[in-house]
Length: 429
Image (cartoon, rainbow, N blue to C red; front, side):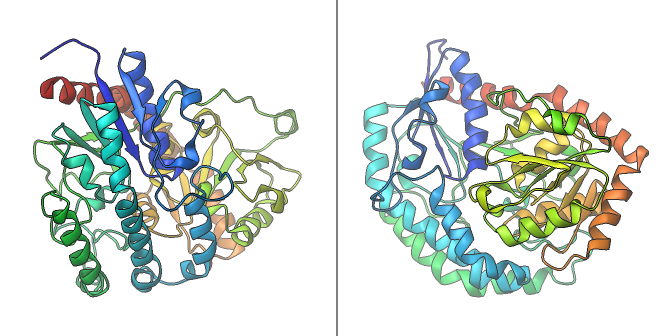
């Protein structure tokens, strides 16, 4: 063991959720005196340095001719595949889930030489990955490897929990086997080829049908009140973070136009990716415009195309973690960051899932009674308005969630993660 300052290399997925999660944990480590370097995707250039981190960035594909916004690849991908989100989760395995894995695999292969060079330059004491895909360079560097799961914990599979990406209920196993069989059919060949490439780079073989290794230390972000602890026991290298809420967001003051109105205050966000579906965003907004409530809207990358009503205020980017404590309810796509942050602050949710693990989060919150899952493209006006009235009027639920949020915040997952990563780095030094 040593008390010296560590060099900690983070490699998050390019999307905002994993990157923001790593920013929160990395900020704590940086303030504890450690050197924190981000091997993030190149579109994040300048954004991480501004927060006090070092940047040693990677390209996941040939560089674009023009400068791109952070995570632009995935914004474009979501926009182009949006029509597929109207399909069932079973049908999406072929048309959404598999293409996502293919894109991730292409990125992993492309940046493998870059990662090796970064590791040689940075000489990290510990490597932290928040992603769903294996990068062999990270596990062959001879340093402690920390895996963070900031998707729904069904990603860590087990026989007594629903299959990941399915959105199927926990207490009805009727469709589990069919979904697993279809996942095997659609993904077996892709996984086999990727596993062969991973092992050819000198990394261990991947677990069956998994696209990433376990780490020497494994962290997953999900509150105990929503976790599958009784159905999926985990080994001693696994640690739950009840939340991981960054402290780098700027403060937020409610705009005067909303302060001067009556009604409940509601936050609406489909995430940086989901908000690229302007038609869906506008559909929800037009229904909410008929209510007596007030809304803060995260408008996302196509913000200029989204028209807000008089009872709303919004912007392209919002400091979500500064807004959530002030609202009464959250309308969300069910991304893991927003879902766990809403629970962190004790807020009920209406969930409109689009793809990937969002269905799993939406189903889990719905079946536990902490919110309402709606059909994202099939909901009626009456269903959305009824869910609003029911959740806002349920004082008992709001009280339970407030108490749960206080306990989640007390557990301070952000510092727990930093301490565990720090200990892994010191043990390997």
